[in-house]
Image 1 (cartoon, rainbow, N blue to C red):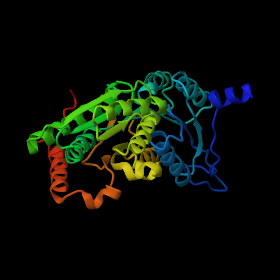
Image 2: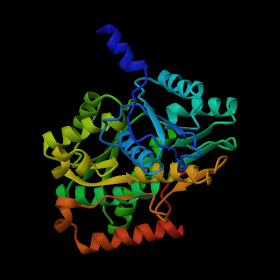
Image 3: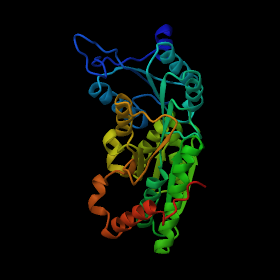
Image 4: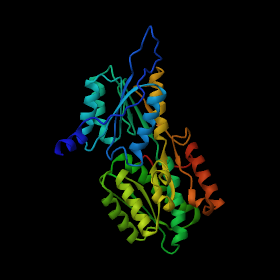
Length: 345
């Protein structure tokens, strides 16, 4: 049993998919398989969010572009180096990683292996090497309107003492980008309607502990929060379940969590989305069609539909036209630059 557990932590988790070449084979001139490896982020591929959505895009691309794919699942920060090293040693053509924790190992591997291409999702670095493409999500552009919506909802739930909260993961720039713009959206609502909704929040320090998320959510609820924005991976899932248990409301993250965690769907106003699956699918497709853009940082934002707000689902009939119109104007203002999301700080 111990050996099995160790294998699940440190060895390769493989997907068996159609393994035909990215370039069409012919009987007279068969082409080698294009080998693409995915190193997953902390929290696992069943997180109903960030990692799972990336995996879905990877799987679709593996079928449509006829690749030879493998995945590696990480349970600790040290696993990123182990997973990347495995794919390097196995002569993979393209290696995909994601997040802050994978950045250093990815950069190190890219510099040491210029013949291998790398894609780093959700992390920006200055001057990436020619074989590394960074893809980042300007989540402040979608978090800001989520803050406006949360402020309005808190205001109608407890007009005498409205509070909108948040629980983030580790306090790193990629997480502060959510929180700073969310609070700016609350402040924008206050200025717009001359109200005093209080924005409060905390950072969990982890992406993988649902119990910590639940405890922090409970603390915010005790401080009067009617709605909580959770952007903390699996830790955030614990927030959503505590919100459900308490009969309050929440805003999800990365994917439409009304769909990915249906049991908490009735308590979700919306989700602050990154189009992770589509972006990963497109990036792999560009590699396969010789359009890989290494040495660059690609931004996914409101103007190119790389980020956005999920549908209101159960709350469609409850969101008045005035708030819908305000949200539309806010998004337009963010795109034109007339509205400042507060990020960068």
